[in-house]
Each structure stands twice: as structure tokens, then as C-alpha cells.
Image (cartoon, rainbow, N blue to C red; front, side, top):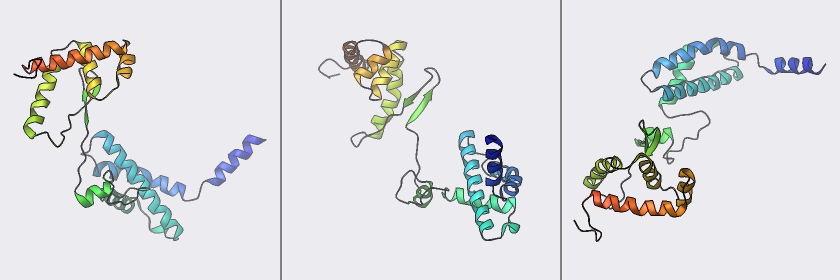
Length: 208
């Protein structure tokens, strides 16, 4: 007796406009996929979902205004696509001061870049070097060339360990990851530092 009651309530809870919108949904998705066809698969999927959400919100508003009869897939999709391209996301505040906001990106010309990259050989993500205020472009370029070359001189295990330490992992965390003692990690840290200086032709006193 309980199950039929729940099913009946479930059927009654769906607004009448659900089916008309679902009928337009395939065409809305088609327009969105075409509009964002040049994006990478992950970004394209996210853009399409944002378009669907914006189109749904616009359609619900038309229903509330008793104007559902003028709602069609193409205009809804084009409106939602413009919203997305303008950095307007459903459920997101239009904060021009928020650096991660798409709206701020459009308004201020901000561009965000990843600070990591995928190493196919090591099958892991690696941090990209970030310059500080004392780092010159020449220093940064040299480091980006030298550091991978230095890693190639290490054993596979030490290369992985060096990358962990370079990303700021604690001694205890690295010890657990590599199943060695914290003392051994500290020793390897010193050995890696010495090897790095030797790689650059420096003596123990730091002179060339």
C-alpha cells in the first residue's frame, strides 16, 4: 500500500512544463555542442550543461509569466549561449572582483593558467615553477630547462621523491608515501640539494 502512494505522489510532483522542456532539450544540447565545438571535451561538457541550466531557468520564467507558448528551443539555446559567453553562470554571483569568476574574466580581461601539468612518463601531475619577485625571466627560463634535466640524472625513485619535496610535501608525509623513515627523507633531501648544486658546477661553499 505504501509503494503505490509514493509513486502517485512522485507523478503529481512533476510540473506540467517538464515534458515540453524535455522535448526541446535535445535541440538545445545540439546548439550548445555546436557553439562550443572548439573547446576541449571537459570544457565543452561543462559549457553544454551550463547552457541547459540557463535555458531551463529562462523557460521556467516564461511559464511563470504565462508565455510558455512563445518558448522554442533555438531562442532559448541562443540566449543561454550568450549568457555563458558573457561569463554569466546560473547560481553564480556577478562579482567583478572575484578573480576566478568568468564574469570578471570577461569584464577585466583576466586569464587564468594551470599551475600543474601531467607527466605521462611518471603518470602524475607536476607543479609548474612559479616566479617570485626576485626571479628574472632568464632565471625562470633556465630553471624550467635545468630542473627537468636534473631530474633525468636521478633514479626513478629519487625523481619521484624530489618532485614530492619540490611541491612542498612535509618530511613525514613523504616518508609515509615512500615507506621510509623521516630521517632517511631528511638525508635524501640533503643529498638532492648537494646533487643539484653539483649539477650547476657549484662547490660546497657555493662558488663555481
